[in-house]
Image 1 (cartoon, rainbow, N blue to C red):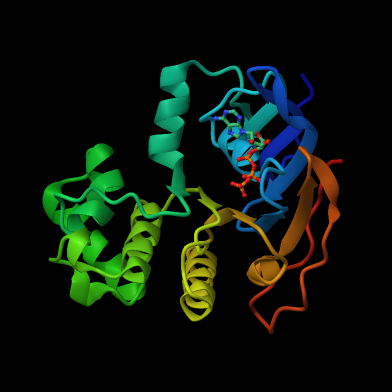
Image 2 (tube, rainbow, N blue to C red):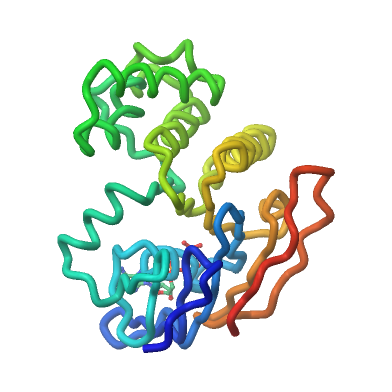
Length: 245
Ligand SMILES: Nc1ncnc2c1ncn2[C@@H]1O[C@H](COP(=O)(O)OP(=O)(O)OP(=O)(O)O)[C@@H](O)[C@H]1O
């Protein structure tokens, strides 16, 4: 095994993954620097979700290596990978998947409670994140009484509340109208930047990738070449970061 570059918080080399013999990733390599917002852009079926799952330890690649903070993930036991996901990673899906029986703040507090944070502290933090994401007034409501855009903001709050090192976001704005979509993505990236949280964001189109620092294209399970992100306003974008091809 070759150790990854020191300044990459996540680093993957030569990832291959197949579902029952059908290839989804065929030799993808990528590095993500600390605090970077990296977009993975590609059409449906290009392998974005599979790559996010390999990077976050949900799937173990058939071949290749995944490293987090200079430690291998692909050789960890299932419980080691689950602990890593619980303690260091956040996940946002394209649909919110909130627990219907719980209120918004209870949903947002789940990662903290799962980590053993006390009820009162978890509640305070969950409320703070719901406020930051403009859904503070929903804190005591259950998901069935809320709009989809509100639920997705609560899911974003849940992913960020534990201040993870990396948030993986799988097309988090997909089910929303264009105005809500832009707002949810902007809220996610702004909150992540202000807390130095690294984000790996899967998106279908370049527009949704425009808030990222760098965009990597995927096509048919391979790197489809880097897609330059449009110039971000001052203070929003960051310098381009290293990519291992
Ligand atoms: N659970 C699964 N079982 C079998 N094949 C799968 C499974 N999940 C994904 N695939 C296949 O693997 C390939 C990559 O899928 P993946 O979901 O990673 O792509 P994607 O770019 O995230 O697509 P989308 O934007 O539609 O989510 C596709 O051909 C898909 O049909």
